[in-house]
Image 1 (cartoon, rainbow, N blue to C red):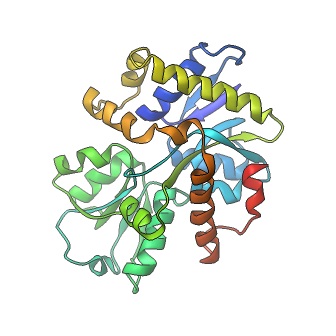
Image 2: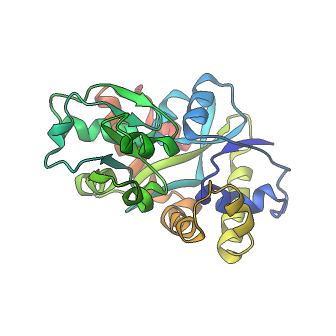
Length: 277
């Protein structure tokens, strides 16, 4: 089976057992490590592998061909994207008309940013530039863009680039809704056995938690030179009970985010029942 997910520590930690043949009954996995912007586009164009990690924000474009798998993704509290600038701002409205770098136009991070900006920046920001997430902080530091929307381990490292946080969009979302943040989703082609895939992924999650040291070499091999401490913090933040099972709160969060976005015309409208088909 072909699968695509990022090289980030949470993904390599979660899928280590599945990729390395340690899950009983699972097929061999041919992995492509790809940035979320690539998998979002592959899924929308129906050109990617049959099993992928994408942004929840990209789901409305792909539900005809792909099914949401209720485990293996990233959804939680205290783990949202950050809006960063080189110079500290006293008011978000100072971003009006500015250039902002984002990791993907179909990312949950960008969707949260757009919903937040509706409230906080009535004049609107200026130009949006999409770039790989690891390039965003250097671009803000070097003055190539006015602000950056960052995800993943940037939460732990942005101070090293001399940057200031304008807003933690995860905190804003949780304060606004009381719900966790839906970040990354696992999707599979509708022709595949959803229940079998979910059971394999849950077994991989269980193995990771029961044998945390087993995946360390694999995680660090793909961790883009981050330290072990940062990689561990990344895993601790993004791998949680929602990774094993979305549950009622997980589905409520997804429906709230995508329902609000559809109302604003940011994503296509769709039947919420498709999330659980």
